[in-house]
Image 1 (cartoon, one colour):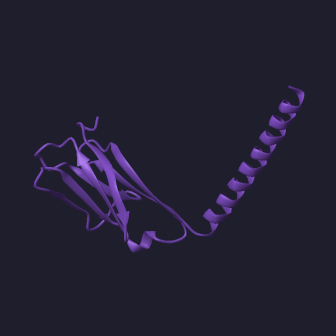
Image 2 (tube, rainbow, N blue to C red; image 1 turned 180 degrees about the vertical axis):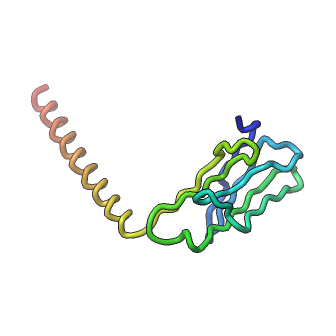
Length: 122
């Protein structure tokens, strides 16, 4: 169980992922951010005047590049995943997207032909 903890993304800009941690009440929530099983540096967890907990995760520059990288935000006590931040970039990804768009176009053409045939026959 997550002991009622949850994380909601509020913003991702300028290389910093930000979110709000709910379910901890006034107690500091025990969360950790990992990449490939290692802690991500410079993660900050702060409370505001209303008692909300804000998580700030600077994305390490080493993760900005070719391939797919995932940051895992989890409850420190249980190890249960609360949120994932996935970064995907590079030429390999571009090829995957082109292939997927090609498959979608072919499927759409198939559906259009079937629909037109249905209208002609019906």
